[in-house]
Length: 341
Picture 1 (spheres, one colour):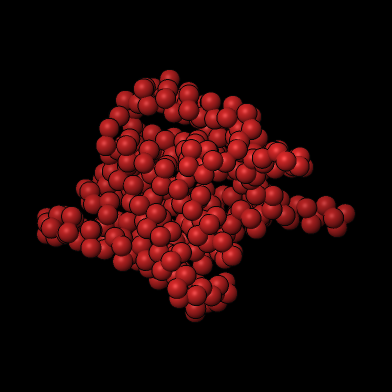
Picture 2 (spheres, one colour):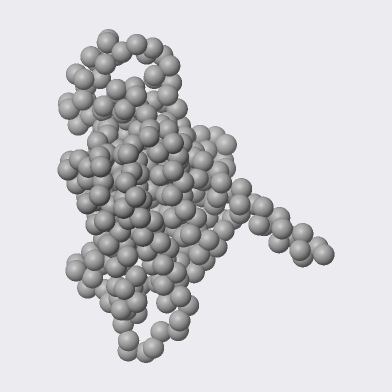
């Protein structure tokens, strides 16, 4: 009886952790799109920079003041040799996600972001010469096919937004691959990751944001109605972006690797549905089918990787890079907010 109560408690915690993760993720995405579309604040670099500033402050408060997580010490030379390059890729990834949101609907952007497993496998195979079993390649077919169908049938297609989202997938894959070597020896959780990388990302992005968007932001401040409420929404999106990192940490510790994978793909479906309800962007039947095929492919890909990771390796046979076996190994090394955004 006690054992069943413990299991029920774990189930409830897992469900709550997934729901709050979905809530933060979808809210950040919708708020960013609302900022670009309804507030007419068409400055993705500035929005990204505000998010980095909020995340830097939030991580400092969480670690230094509230002591929610212990600080993982990093050598000063490693901060520039390892953390800075990762922060640069991290910055590009977040910026491209916001740029794509500026030009294409949430539903289309989220579907394209689901292409990340394919770009990761292809990059590892082409550049790092890693071996993958045929089942991995087969699992990528529905992902690629779904993306093609969605792109062809997208009624609000924009080349610039599409390219930004696609290059963002490459940046996400590069970030994941580089983390294996650059961050070797450091077991970062999502909060410590933001603590170290967000300040660097702010420094990297601040000057381009001022040079490219500064004049436009000043004009917007002078011409836009309801400045106070609009700025509250913009900065609130930054605060929620940091909260999303916290929710990722919580959901990873409350679920299994398989559950995390499935919940991540369902999260995309929830974001697509909510964005359609709010913005009413036109979605054709074939476009919806393409999105469903892509998400199904991502779930199947995660399942295949998980099953292969459970198989004992045969001596002398190159092994397919495995998916995490435990929740601790699932801890994200960098913040993929546009998974959220």
